[in-house]
Length: 208
Image (cartoon, rainbow, N blue to C red; front, side, top):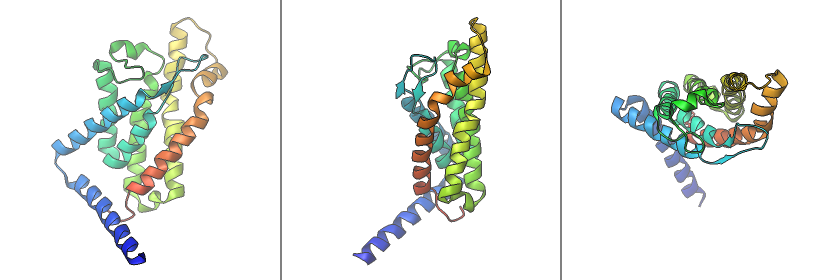
């Protein structure tokens, strides 16, 4: 039984290494197809949402798609995937939270978070691909937490503040943080931990 388990583990390690080697060497068409697929997945996850009564920003599962895009596609194509998600939504594809899309989303309170997804994917993908040490559990978790809690939220909070100002509401730092950041910290930490666990299982420790 131990020999069989060892063989199964070795096959699993080889399969995941083979994917990342293939990803590196695959055609542009294949990479575009993967980028579009992960953008679609992010759009589906965006529909898993909870609206809170005191904020126009919903609690969504989109970040899982961001993490997977970064891990599976790497820095460049992970970022492109999230750019496809952002631009596609603004062009009218209804895959933002609540099946929303179109130019009206640009004037909404959450568009900054969507552009933060691009920054997060670029950062996570770049850090994972650059050094094998970053693929260990603790650094990987830290990288994903930083991306989710800082890189997504900085543009998100800026866009929320602009939206509040444009609608004639009072804009204060405390108010913006209460509406767009503080209520989501625990949930985003949990999503980041789930994403880090998935990334740890997917990414090989070997160079590719």
